[in-house]
Amino acid sequence: IADAGLVGLPNAGKSTFLATVSAAKPKIADYPFTTLHPNLGVVRAGDKDFVLADIPGLIEGAHEGAGLGTRFLGHVERTQVLLHLVDGTQEDVAGAYRTVRRELKAYDGDLAKKKEIVALSKCESLDPDPLALRLAELQKAARKKPFALSAVAGIGVKDVLFALAREITRSKAHDAEATAETRKPWRP
Image 1 (cartoon, rainbow, N blue to C red):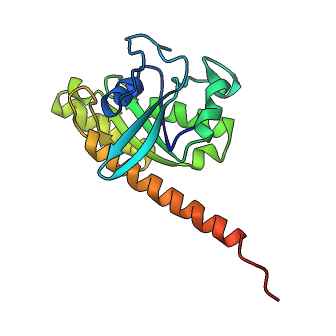
Image 2 (cartoon, one colour):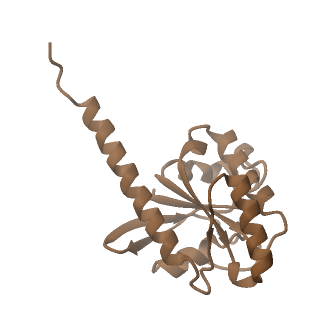
């Protein structure tokens, strides 16, 4: 479906990010489940173009069909890299991160192994101290340094796009190597 997929809880800023970085025009509103179908956009990072999919928000129980559930987790399977957005304006950013990760793993263990870039979204809404605290909480939960991101204010957008482009390039190179290995001629 796409090179990279946006995942996160409803209202994490996925559609806003897609609209900011591509010509896609997803529906954006301040209520859960605004996105009812995956939206695709072509993104450019330097000299690299890639397709980014905005996947409808995942909620607890999505792997069993809750919310839009299994209908869209299958789309996530067909991406090479995940951009996991966590809404920085919510109190429990670590819990939000873990909810989505549990759903990915429960749906398909291999899905949870995909390369993931993590970003704390809506950072323009936070003062420096709460922002630093939430970034630290998210880093502890994700076990990797998250990007501070605001699609509305343009904060961190280029950094995230270049990180996605690098991971997509690596993933494609790895897939090409694996394919070449399986196609080597047999020699006695």
